[in-house]
Image (cartoon, rainbow, N blue to C red; front, top):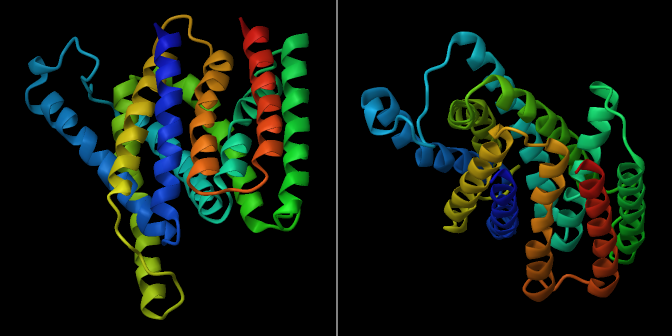
Length: 300
């Protein structure tokens, strides 16, 4: 069951990436990110209130949010900081880079999750996993050559560095997720880490508003795609946490499958955003998929 939940999460995550691009195109990043956290919290707020005021209505369902002690909330707060840092870097990257470059590189995140498990937890990689790592890294280097044709230097472009920072922090988040799903309730984690993000974002929003008054920040344009962005993110994460919490679930399998939804934003970027060098990127994307398949085969 956790495998099917992971596949569904990957499709929703692919649509989420498209809505993210629509929301950020020629728009201010901080307000979009803040509203994303607000709408996500509103999505879960009824479940939290029902769990507190009428627990019998949700008990023994997938949507019940148990109470948590102070220690648990500290772990969840750390999760909020990690995720928000990854999102912030990713939002700036996807705003300023072609979707057909951002999404495939983001899809290599499982490689860094696996390397993290290797370095932090002492897990040993087998031949298939090492092959997956090698193919994925080669694909990243090939993307750097395609990027040069579009005037994007992988060494000097700050948005490329934001993208890689997002991938690295996201990998840390993936490893931390597995730990949290073993030790804490999945709904408690998802609901509260979403709510905490609002309070973390508030100071950044105030700074943005102050700088905007002085003409140092881009104007914000509200778009309904931001609501869609939040909805698809919540649904994708809900299925992701459900998959991770199931007995026998493997983060080394879940992570590459979840990123297979990259095909959706890639196609949208090619057809609707008119990204360039699609044929070359498609061949490299095939290399990324081969790398993910190797990780999957090595983790079975």
